[in-house]
Image (cartoon, rainbow, N blue to C red; front, side, top):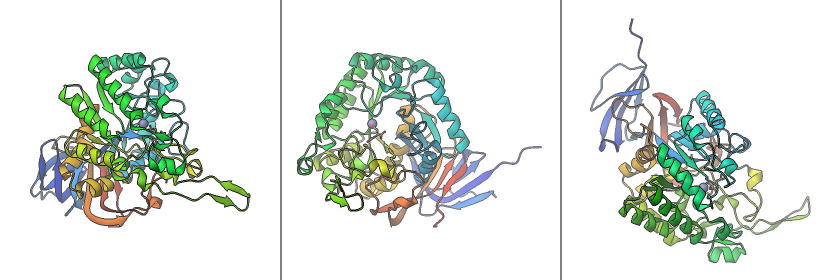
Length: 448
Ligand SMILES: NC(=O)N[C@@H](CC(=O)O)C(=O)O
Ligand SMILES: [Zn+2]
């Protein structure tokens, strides 16, 4: 006897699929976890019918830059809470960065993350391997072993490998194994204690500044190393105007470089950093050194209007390929200090889609098709996975996104353990209604 097929019919949605250039109202039939058909009107009797009228039906988003904090910092996030936050944000696949404790520098830790993510059954999680052992920048990690365990990329994220020769050797291996190199670009010596963008706002707060050169110098170096080794270089969280011009130039030269921009870097400038007057804890009779809201502290920092404009235009002109979150959860206690002492990083999985839609699509920079490219199709291509495409025969990783709902971001609705966002209370448009992974509904907006 033939086994009964599990079927889901997504009706009347605006199917936006970059792989085929499709942008039209269609029904999508999902059978046993796979897209079976996309047609004008499918009449089949199904186990579940989903009305997607007025919504975008896009390939599930793929986030190339997520910090799951597991193993080692489970008070900030776990594989489970992170994977659930992902599907709440419309992400069906996420790449986990290796700056955990222990650092992901060998196949055992890769296997730990992959196995744990499978038991959660929310977003697909792909672990990224560290470039050097313990991220110490001294000797290469077991890159070959981790490739065998399934890493799609290596990265030293959280820092740069400052030894260019060692990084070159890593790039040679990446080229040999055909994996991507995800580059966090930061000349650590040049940071010199800076905690926010080097500008008038930093001076006003009396805080050390991080210049654009901190980032730009390593971007230039890494592009040259990619040219010399043939490695596929992907630049993480680009924040400067010159990052855009360097990527543009490198691409014109035929160098294999791609780049990501994070929603906070195209939405906010350092002028938006909320200043806080120092206070006194009357009970403990101590001065609280607070200077500004540390939910605006991340690395790279919020830059200037000029940088933001260049990033938006870079995304518009397809110089910049990817929108990634750099989801970096921290506990309230971690962040509840001062700009000087708090760790860098903000959460992003649950605000990326609405910020992208509001700032870039409604802002006139991206078409909905480009949004699907930068949040799904391009990431899949860069890491070399058969996803980011919802044509028949492909795995049904799908997001249903309502472009008409306007609401206020409320951090208390997050599935992430992290509440460290500068976007709490911000009015946005565009809401994830439903997320399917492997043809299963893994998130559903109960309010509708
Ligand atoms: N971006 C951040 O501000 N922080 C990240 C590290 C990183 O992505 O560089 C983190 O791990 O917290
Ligand atoms: Zn980084």
